Every structure is written in C-alpha cells, then in structure tokens.
Length: 365
Image (cartoon, rainbow, N blue to C red; front, side, top):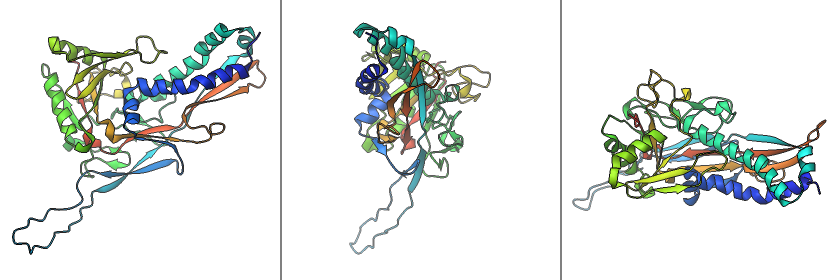
C-alpha cells in the first residue's frame, strides 16, 4: 500500500537522534566537546551568550622572610567577558506526493529515507563543517556559524565577525574575536607559526607546545585538523615512525569522506576532507594558507578542545525545536502535491582560552 507522509515522518523521527549523533561523533571537534561535557543545550534567554575569559592569575605572591610581612593583596583585572551569538538556520526539503504514493513496503520506505531526509541532513552537516574550517558558508547560507579561518568572517546576527585564527605572529595580532580584541586583552591571541621547507614537524611541535602550556589544567592540545596534502606530507615524513593510524566512517552523504588520523605527541591528527585552502575565502595573505599569488600552501589547526564549548537555543521540539538538527514537519505544500520537512539548527561554538589553540600555515610546502 502507499506510504503516507505520517508514516514516513514516524520513521524520520525514529532515525533523527541517530543522524544527530552521527554528526557529533563523526566530526572530532564536536565529539570531543561533548566528551568534555562542554555543551549547554536548550540555553534560554538573550540571543547571545556572555562567557568569562580569564587569561592570567588574579593575585600576587608575597615572599615571607620575618613573618611580619603584609600580603600584597593586589587584585589584577584579568577577567573579561566574551560574547557569542547563536544563528538560526533551517534546511527545508520537499518530498513529492507521487513518491509517497508509489512507495510500498519497507524497502521502498528505506529508499525514500536515504534519498530525502538522510541525504538532506548529511548535506546540512557538510555545509556546517565547511563553514567551520573554511569560512565559505555564504555559498550555502550557513555563514552564521563560527569559522576558524581568520581571513574570513561569519555573520550570526547581522554584522560580520572575524574568524578565530589569525595568521600572524602574536605581536601583530589585533583582530576582534568573540567581542574581545587581540593585543588589548592579556593572553587573548592564538599561537601561530609559518612552516618552512623541511621543518614541518619542528614547526608543528613549536605551536603544539606553546598552546599546550596555556591552561594546563585542560591538558595538552588534543586535536589537529589539516588538509589532505599536509596530512600526506606528514605521513610520508614519518616514514616508518608512524605510531598508529585510525579511520572512521565519516559522513556517509559525501563520497571519500572517511576520516583518517595519526598521533602527534598526545594529539589526534586528522585529515579534514572539507578543508580546502585554495578557496578564495582564505584571502591572499603572505602568512596565510593562501598566498598573495593565489597559491594554496596548506594549514593545520591545533585545538585544545577543553577550551571549546557549544550551546544551542530552543527547547520545545514541536515548536521552535531544540536547535540540534531537529526535524520538523511534515507540512502540506500549498498548491502542490508535495510535503515539506525542515531541519532546524540553532547552535554555536566558542572558545574561552584562545591562547591554548593555534595554527601553522604553509604546511603543504
């Protein structure tokens, strides 16, 4: 017998949690953020979130010699308030009534699920990941999500904001990230190095250790994302010294998106299939992943995921939804023999200890 929209919707609702978990588990940034417990779901209140940023100790030591010394009791102002906005994005897709009418039996329903809702949510996943690493979300209307690319911007609430990682030495950094300006707030900067030929491991170690010693309680840098050319160069450079490699299924909606990883010190070092430093979103910066001549030279992001957090807006799954790739619908399309579903995302990432993260450019030379 034909499949009704309600029957298909029931199947979609049953599978939605599995699809949501697939996104979290198959992108290592979100996977580690959730494992660290750094997630605030159903955050309510203002459309933006303020969070504390402490980049240094708040006091001063008094050396005791005679026992009569008075404590210095100097209070240093090191606490600042970062700010992050949560965008709201909706991916809508339509299933023709003819397809529903012709679908009969479990096999036909499974085929419909793969052709429509599963493919839709996987593509939405890919758009978000690409924006996060490349800053090219305007191509797919997901530019509200934060980007690591400091030569690009994101726009969660009507104005352009600069990407997180600046491709400059610490003394030259001055971008405003999460409403705090680098160079004016002590410790508010990212670590950076420009690779030189033959010294890839040396330059990676340099940024790795400089980032790892910041916020030591959170452990060392535990995640590195790079383009495929950089990964292969590092792999070949290791020769027979490969510690071990892992591979994960990755997003099934994108061919060849298996995620492969090596170990670098204590960090998991992954290929990010979406990272493409030849894109114009990387600008033309002699220190960046795309040189002034337009040449793609690769980059590697280094993240201490304990310093990264995620929050979502929304609570009622039937109305505004929970904002975590929740599926809403179906709704009959007026004047058409079709039904419409919506995938709702209201989510944002932010970092509260920027100097515990870094980037190395020219890693593919």
